[in-house]
Amino acid sequence: MLAMNASALDETTTNGTPATARPYLSGGLAALSAGAAAIHFAVTFEHFSENLWYGAFFLVIAWAQLIWAAVAVWRLLRWWLWLGIAGNAMILGVYLASRTTGLPLGPDQGHTEPFGALDVTCALLELVLIAGCAALLWRPSLADRPVRRRTGLAAIARMAAIPRRRDRGDHGGDDPRLGRPGGTGGHGVRDDGVVVRGARSAARHG
Image (cartoon, rainbow, N blue to C red; front, side, top):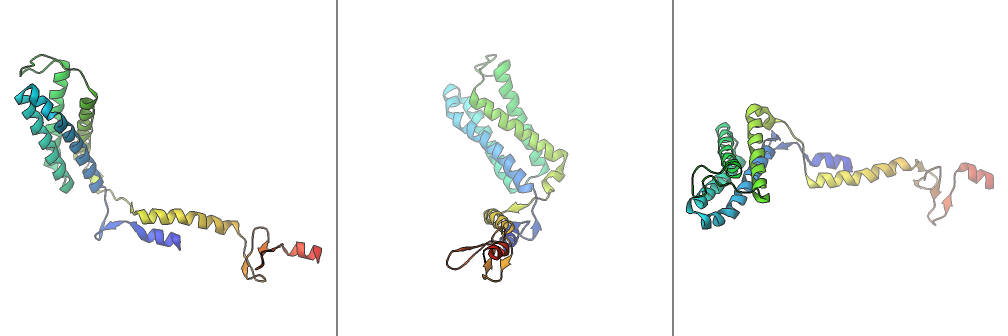
């Protein structure tokens, strides 16, 4: 019964259409872009204090990444994936230049900055985002692969069904003399709690 209920709770369709990997992929890409945007927002005011143009640059790319994430959750379009690749590749290029050779423009022209934990994390998010967009462009069928969704109730029902199945395998058949299920090895329990052994034991002591 529990196994049947667990199967009934499995969500293989959503609104009558087969569930696919599309919402998971779009949500993952959106989360990557939103994470990078959050980091850029966090350091925007710090860069404003250094230089107006640096601060404006960080503010623009932070909003751009946040808007990209919002649209990606709603719908993944091919040109939007291309835009995500191009935009984040440009950001990564500027970042690597600032850490290796120095920016060719601005007040810190030619000056290199050290790598930090926060900026490396942001760069990794953007790199994974680019790889994910490229994978979907290269093989669009990845988004249409069917997936099996399972609700929390179904998982609980399946976990509860496992010990029930084990209990059924450990006990013998019903004992018609006692009106209760017999125990392992031909044992039974009477209403008064006395253990009744099998027919061989009864014959031996009778």
